[in-house]
Length: 342
Image (tube, rainbow, N blue to C red; front, side, top):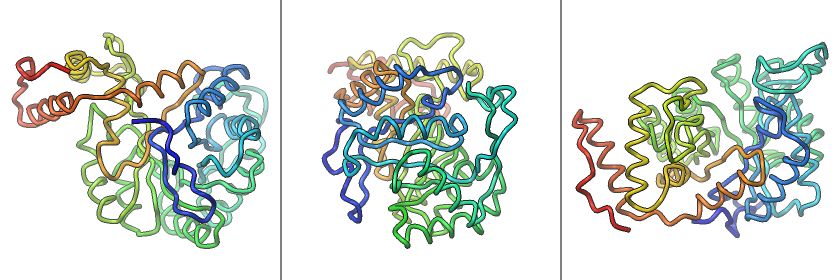
């Protein structure tokens, strides 16, 4: 499997196909800590060199910082060769400028504040302002961002119809909803208005149960899934799972650490690593079109692209499935006796 795909960025007006690996630009918005300009330069350049042609951002990421940084760095590349998605639902208004945005997770000055707005006017304004920050005439995909955290009903009654209307007008090529709440995404799929969902953390190597109904709905309605947070906020990011590994940005429960170590053992017996399995696992479902990974540095980009290119033996996936079935049945059987050869 490769990060590059010659059909990834079809010409405007053609069918929208996503490559297996996308670049998540939250870190360009200084997620948790400052990202230097040199790191941002290197990350985007390495992504392009690795064949990555899908870039995802949002106004929320660093209250506009991610969009501005990403746009400047993509400006030197042919627009018809890459895809960009951004998000709506949070407008950016002037802020006090006396502190920072770390309460929302971003190490940037609080010179802007977020205001929820899923009205048609708000969605269209958010889109226009994102184009200004990105320096683009268009984006390819617009996602309604985290509707469960804001005015949910407005998102469904006004926001999704507005997005569908913009798609029909040719302003964007595809529309969707991004969330970690599988129930909200399932409801959105069943409206028949959207093309994609961006699912955060609920369909990963470690956990799938919460997404079962969503995956079925996506299959029934022909809606594609962009999988994000596939490392479960750190728990699957390293082959050696530490005692203080994080899940949902907090200390991982002991049972999850044990399960992650079991999965690492499977990977090791088949000559690969836990992150290799984690990156590729979601793409095994036919509804999943792309995995988008947050990448702060060129090293992050290169390692993730390499993981996407690792050949995973079929026997490894069989062992993963066997242990999942055992866990669901309450029989924590081991795969030690399974074929561990490559």
